[in-house]
Length: 117
Image (cartoon, rainbow, N blue to C red; front, side, top):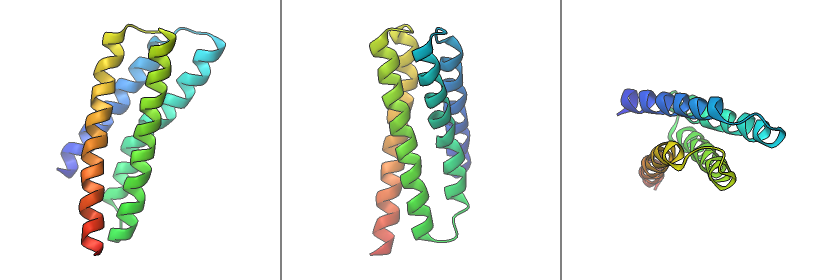
């Protein structure tokens, strides 16, 4: 699962960057583009860091960061959708993947926390 999830989070980052590249160039969209590019690419980077964790507690802390980043990315996608900067069909695919990644990481976090008990 580890390598598959590394690839999946990298694909997610690339999909987010594709969204960023299609945004209109306005003052407000530049702010959103910068923010979503940071959070969307951080999902995979932080997951890789979690894979290198030296302890279960460190893994939990890093997966919590991954969840924060994917949640922030979903927030920026909501803003893009609300502003109607891109067609819904473009956003919906990336939105779905963000929600699926969230579910995977929540499950992973629950499993890791259960091991601490």
